[in-house]
Length: 278
Ligand code: C2E
Ligand code: CA
Ligand code: CA
Ligand code: CA
Image 1 (tube, helix red, strand yellow):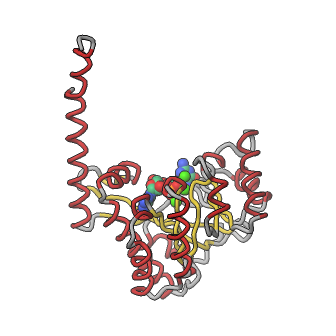
Image 2: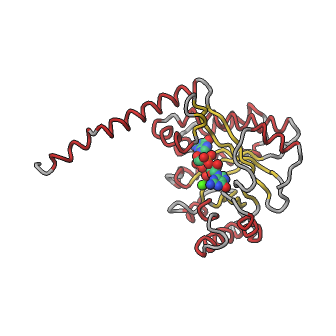
Image 3: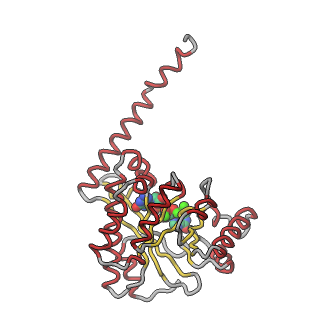
C-alpha cells in the first residue's frame, strides 16, 4: 500500500480535473450548438478521374463556434460519440445532406451522389434504417444518390452489421467502406458485408508513387476491388503524381485538396453551374 501513496494522487491531479472540466464544457457547448443550429455542412467534390467531372460530394460536418470559429470534426466528433450527442448530430447531417442533394437536383444536377459519414453509435442504433428512409421520403431524392460511409471501426459485429446493411440496401442506398485498410479485419468485411464501394484511405495515397509499401498496398486494394466488382474512391489526392498513378491503376474516383477542399454548398453550386472539369 505504501508504494501506492504517490500515484494515488494522480487520480485527483488538477490536470485531470481540468480535462474533465474541458470535456463537460465541450459537451455543453455542443448541446447548445445543436439547439441553436450552429452546425454546418461543408462538401468535398468526388471527381471521376477519367473525365474530371464532379460526380459526387462528401458531406463533412463543422461547428460554427462563437469564439473559436469553425471547429473541425476531429475536435468534437470523439466527444459527441462518447456522450451520445453524435445521435442528434448524425441525424441532422443526414437530413441536411439529403436536403442539399435535393437543392442540387432542383438546380438541374440530378445525378450528384451524396456521401454521408455514419458513426459507430448510429450503426448500433435500431432507428438508423427508419431515419434514412425518412430522410429519403422527406426530400424525395433517388436512394441511389445517397451513399453511407461506414468505417471499419463502426462495424463492431459482422452479424449485426450484415443485417443492418441489408436493411439499408433494401432502401436502395449505396454502402461504402471508409478508410479501407486501416482496421484489423478489412478482408473479412468484404467477404461478409453487402458493400458497393471501397474508399482507399489517405494514409496509403500519401506515399504514392514513391513509397514502395504504399504502392504495393494500393495495388492490392485495387486488384481486390476489381475482382470483387466494387467501386473505388481514393481519398486525400494532393498531387498530380498521385492522381496519375491512381488513374493508371484503374481507380474510378478520387477526392483531395488537389481538386478542392471541403467548402460550403454555394461555392460548389457555382462550380457546377460553370460545368467545371478538373
Ligand atoms: P473522413 O471521413 O476520412 O473524411 C476525409 C477527411 O480528410 C476530411 O477531414 C477532409 O477534409 C480531409 N481531406 C480531404 N482531402 C484531403 C487531402 O487531400 N489532404 C488532407 N490532408 N486531408 C484531406 P474533416 O472534414 O476534418 O473530417 C475528419 C473526419 O471527421 C472524417 O474523416 C470523418 O471521420 C469525421 N466526420 C466528418 N464529418 C462527419 C459526420 O458528419 N459524421 C461523422 N460520424 N463523422 C464525420
Ligand atoms: Ca468519409
Ligand atoms: Ca475516409
Ligand atoms: Ca481517412
